[in-house]
Image (cartoon, rainbow, N blue to C red; front, side, top):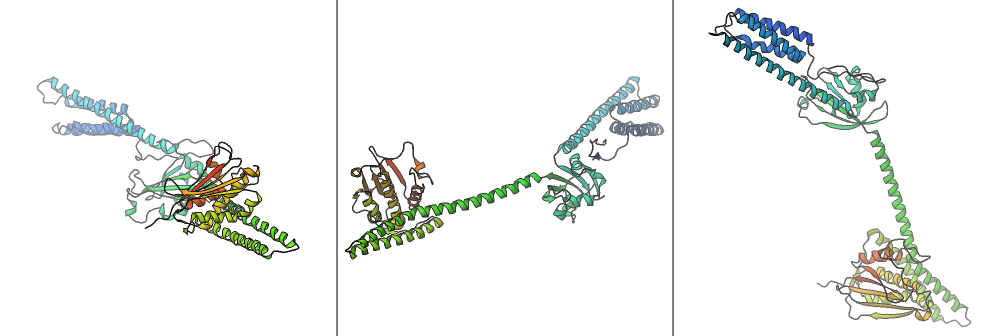
Length: 489
């Protein structure tokens, strides 16, 4: 093999012939001629009784392998001439033609042997060149260590560019300490004879070059190389950019987690603010009523006591909303008990009574009799109905007082579930709004948060039902939700 020519500043890296050191073409040719002379002399001394002409194949093969096809042809010519000159006078053939026929056959065999051997040598050399070309074109540093002789027998140009020097001029210990120190014996010389087997698996690990601070992936394992018994191939790939990308990805993931936590806290705070707004407004309304009653010359104690009791009930309800909402957000599961859906509707109307009276809304109840009980969390279902009623009242704010009608009905649905419907005669919903209406923070109200319907759908789905809406033919809109009936054993 010839030396590898490198451009500055990277020094050239010497390639080692994996097939072993060989003689030059001239030395091989001279040696082959001497062997031909020896075979001819031996054949002559024995009187051609042993017929040693087949031994001419040895110098022919030697010359062809070291000097190529032309050198092999010259040795064939020399061997044929020696055979022809020395054997012609002593051959035992009855006719001269047989002697020449043997010479012709022998010459043809020698020529064929040279041609095949030259083709084989070229094929092996090209295979060697392809093997080395692949190693040289790799973007990873590659080197081979002969542990028996403690030397580096091969290193590609990528490794030289990594180190900015010829790796073959370095000691094995220095090179191993630089790239393989963190991996220890895992990619170093095996300590036992069994691990020196060529069937031993490759190992890999990540190391850091302390000289440059860059990260490398080192892969190592035993390979067959020449006649050495213990040779390791090591591949060093620069993974600094991948490590940097992983670090940035980890930082980005942590930022996303932090953002998600902040978003969750914001959503919880907004949800609580939205849900407790109704009982707080009711408390304020009852307090205003108490103040008006107390300013009268004649105070009706029963009215004041009733207003204060309702105010207290709203305060308790606000606390229950906070507690239940916290548990629901934490576990996403309600606390079900046996309850009557008609009772839940009536309780919801009682809680919204103040707003119904202030907005002059007429309520029509169409509650089905003998409905089965349902397994549900009554506080959460009440909050759903109150939210739907509040939305219906808000949608009729611009309507004439005589047109403000709210209809709440209960019945058995076609799928054997209990259905609750809340209808209003308000301005309705804009065209083209579908499930987007239930998306968090989407609202059609100027001052809305966009959380009410999203929370309602989550509550209903947690109970095993569903929530949807229908646009009425006339003014208004109808919202429906279903809950499963209590299953009887």
